[in-house]
Length: 569
Image 1 (spheres, rainbow, N blue to C red):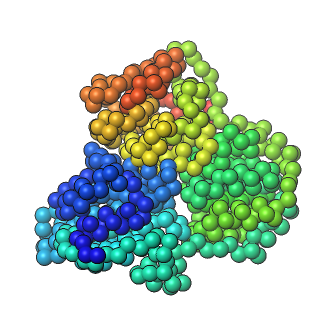
Image 2 (image 1 turned 90 degrees about the vertical axis):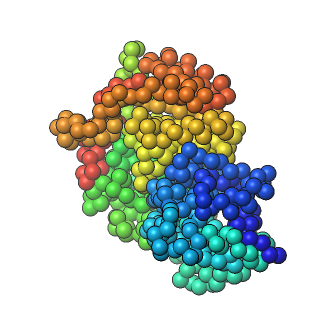
Image 3 (image 1 turned 120 degrees about the vertical axis):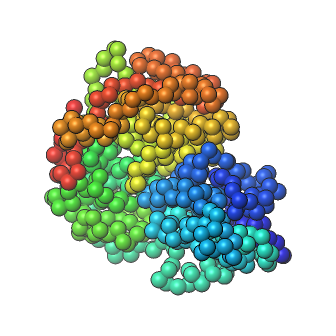
């Protein structure tokens, strides 16, 4: 059947099972929005206050559901406002298809109004980009783009469509998604071995070798990385950990890949990792890392990292192997499939003496509570007691992020939404919007700091407009906390441009958007505010006053040995 390119775009989204799109309209993409008008009952569009908010919302939707997120934007500044969100999704392997429209073919290359080579800009931070010149290219490109975004190591893809391609007509034939691998451009791509999108099947010889290494180990340690979360392998991973009876350290991106309440959990690993996690890494004889990049926040000093251990790396992306640390063995494959094969082969183990050593060190920082102050541990304890266990938490980046990961316990993939690789301030509220839209029956919290919140608080307009009962818990220390912490410990208390003077009244800000808020400074006041927020049925901002010099503990400085704690308590 013949239809406009704009209608083909909508049909392709329906073909992919898309039910929600986040975006912001503009001139060059108006044909697509006009086509979307007729499908409002099948595709819900969430218009955010800013395109960056839309990019993070689509990312949050993808992370919390495991499906591909979709984001619309117009040309020029609309497209470039997506760049931070694209890079955030790329660094954390989140599958999002970003769809922009550009000026028409006659205006390309002429510095036309709002013209931008967004495919060139986005190329280093996407799995691939497309520039669509004609309507008859759209169907195959969309099918290929979604397959690439979700396949192998997931990640973002950008499709930029010239405006004339959305207006002209072309033939469109519906194609069941199950048949995409046999047809058109996508079929040709998959047929080429060098561009095969399927996850590689793990080599059974490599699996058997790891089983032998496990049998010989006396002090094994597991690292749960983001790959466990992305492949939704949490059930298989927990079975494996219990079977080999090994402590489990969790990376920032691994939150939700292993239950935080499992007795084998040692807590976070790395720069702000627990003493138990970091001491275990330094003393284990076999380290098995699933879907972990060994970034500079985990393997702070690669030469001394797990120096007594044989390191085994399981990852879907061959390029990650031996990139940051040298391994004794590796397995290429999807974490879920590798774990299935291991669980069929590994016998039950008992490593009680090793566990006794590891858990002689604390898995969380201990605080001394004072009745007249509010600290991060009190906040997390109250949240854990009052909020449902399946509450979704979206964070921004900084001290509050580390506290949320250290002290909250995540039980399933997509429960923690955080920018781990790119460290994007302003990510949290957009991500929370994406999560709440996709999980209307779950409690969704945004955990943020005052520095981060000022970067994305305009998305309270989106929270209010769509009546999303998202609770924002704001750690208000009147400073850029993590930067100040470094200035305190490393830069001899030279506080340059970190203190935030003349802060807005965040309660009045919430009220200006038609939401509710409360400023609290004691544990009792916070508990009352959270109860009110949970019952009010609309967006709520809790402004939590904490000490300016409150620090994230422990801390190991970058480049140091993982047990060389700069700060413990």
